[in-house]
Amino acid sequence: MCDKSYVFSKFELIKKPVHDYQVIMEALAPFATFFDCTKNKKLMLVQSGKPVCYLVFEGRGLICRNRDNLVLTTSRAPMIVGLTSILFPLNEEYYWRPETDCIAMKLDASAARQIISDNNLWQHLATLIGYTAYRLNDHNVKLTARSGLSIICKQIYALMDEPIEVRRKVGLTNYILDRTLLSRSYVMKIVAELKAQGKIVLDDKVLVKVEGLEDNE
Image (cartoon, rainbow, N blue to C red; front, side, top):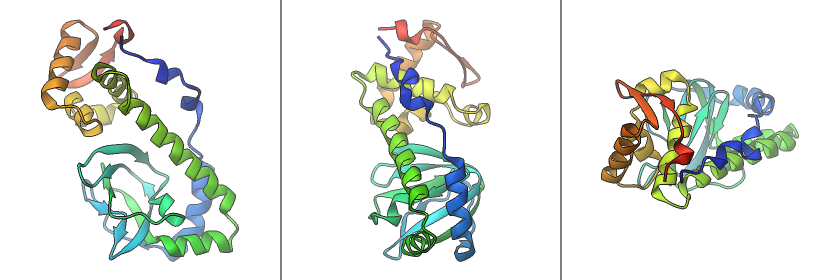
């Protein structure tokens, strides 16, 4: 049976700490520089051997794993990409890919750490890192379901929760493939079965309705 329990998890009640993002971004912005942040540009979290942070004021993007381009999470403004690098420098394993043209600034993670320390913003940073951990936990729940069918169901619900402008731009099969390690043939087979059973409704490849997936074995 497709398990929809994650939708009702208490973790889903956690709201994005927008105020904490704004406080830290306002402190970092005077020391950061604007850069060309265009759609689908691959932006590494380590540049010239140094971890960097991106302050994103408008737009949205994807945090991806470099070795296989697996999408780990979606990020929307206001946001700080590379946040954990402030405390724990990352290698070149991850990158950020804007889904839209963004208004963004960049600075070294080491400089961000010093600014946060000078302004005693550790509590705000702790809140943001906790929120980041929650988002990654949500991804792990979707990726480690008990069966391939359950993994696909969770991704279908995740896509249905996306804004309509996102659903219009990405097909269901590609959305699932970008976020899981399942094979294309298996995903296409399950999606076709769910569509034939009336569990999902697509309009010109756009997901428009999900109904009764939890009852499907």
